[in-house]
Image (cartoon, rainbow, N blue to C red; front, top):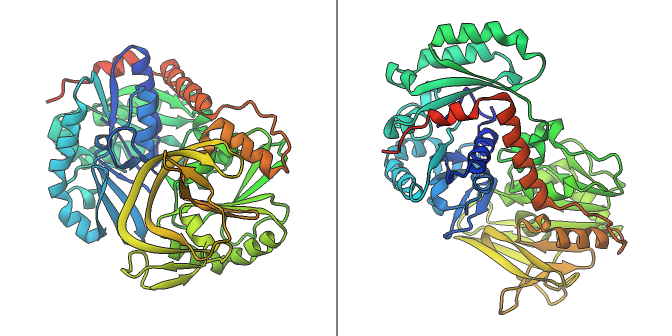
Length: 490
């Protein structure tokens, strides 16, 4: 099990890199995260449901199909103190923090069941913790860190994030707050995200081993390509290293960042294109005037993000761009925002029953408790290209008049999906830009049908980067020794 001294310490990427290194050795590997909190989710390849985006990437690193059992408990924040609870891929309920913690112990049976299921035909399971095991206020009935490690007697490797500072104190402090039984489960620590001369840190490694009796498993330098892999935490959008600027940009795309942004990895393939520049528009900043395309991404709370957008004045910017025939694309929650109205009769997202949309598409959306989860394939109406992606949303959108055309026709029965009107596009399909041919045809369309002249392959790039991550870990750590710390599953 890989735990860490805090959130965003690099657990997800380390698991992915170690998984690929183990897979390269011919092992059958699977990832597992008992409890996750993220609005960046993926529809699984096997079964019907959703898991955290990091576990989807880790499954890819393992070269195995993803499953709902790789992340049996997923919390998707909807507001300051409320989250949607997903159990084994399906919506269970919406809970506030207090309700969740009183409910947490009952989730252990689901976590245990999923853990047992993924053991089948598996040589190695890499378990990822969440946050820090030293959070004493969360220790009761813990299923995310040491509670689960003790439950299955999993050996633990602890990552210390030196990038944030205070790594020595955080590792020694974590040791001090663990019970003697938990301390013995920790087999060693790794200093992660290191920049600079590692020789200067050698005395600190000795101090840490003396203070904790834990083995130093090494120092892992900063992986420069980390920002090119799909991120799970929206904190990634705050980091300048993850904004993918391009010095040769010809197509300028703006993405307004709302508080409840979800599935933001939809834009990653565009951010990596060599002749495309994506500007992440943060609060208190206008949408740039020289923008060619505005993409409004998904949202875990469409009505609140719509209100936030108006408070920032982005609605005025978007309407002004629409009058100038700028391309505007709404994905999932962004699609709902582009419509005329958003009805919430059951107050799923807000106390408001009716919210006014941006009015750029003749579409009305009604939210319901039913959540649609599907993998979809079809033909895009704009360029007749094959299209595939996944739907993960609550709510049904319908045309208010006959003026729009569908964005795509899905499945064997050619079911209409989404809406297009002039330069305005709305769709529920996530992941569509990950497909090279479709993405490059859309870039050509946005550039007034000029050939995109791009040979960049996003799927191949992700696979190559996972191999680079594995090589990075192999170069700086003794992977064979780390893998030898694993023990048989109970």
